[in-house]
Image 1 (cartoon, rainbow, N blue to C red):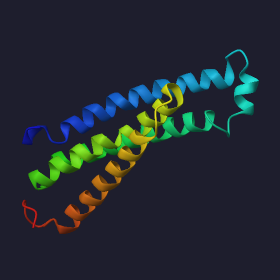
Image 2 (tube, rainbow, N blue to C red):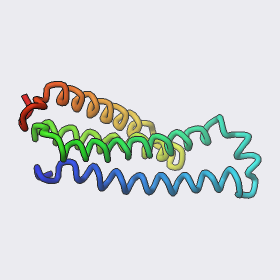
Image 3 (cartoon, helix red, strand yellow):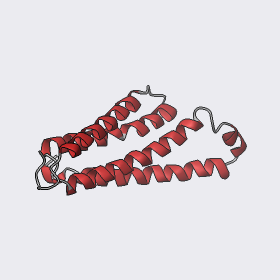
Image 4 (cartoon, one colour):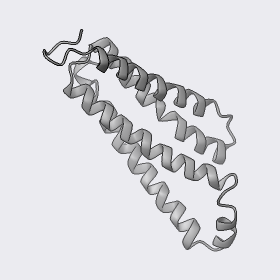
Length: 143
């Protein structure tokens, strides 16, 4: 990833993944309100797999929004380039968490992607917080 691309990928991919999870939300609305057998769907709303589908929808949109915010901040703030690349890549890898939830439900895969995504977005957030605390806001260069 070139230095000028750091942040742009987070915004673009964040928006794209957000669109997908918004569309998935429409599917969930259909299943709850309009699908044949919706009463069974509603009755199982608080147990697996229906509960996990709502978790994936919520986390997918949240992590997409985090990528959009991180991307914009990486473009606007004087973040050290090496740190910016790590933050960007880890935030993007965080999107594996909601994708992993769906892969568990629909494909029966183990929760490896969920764990990798959760750790990635947490580390990205911590690195970004550390970078911002260390940043010299009076000048254009971080400490």
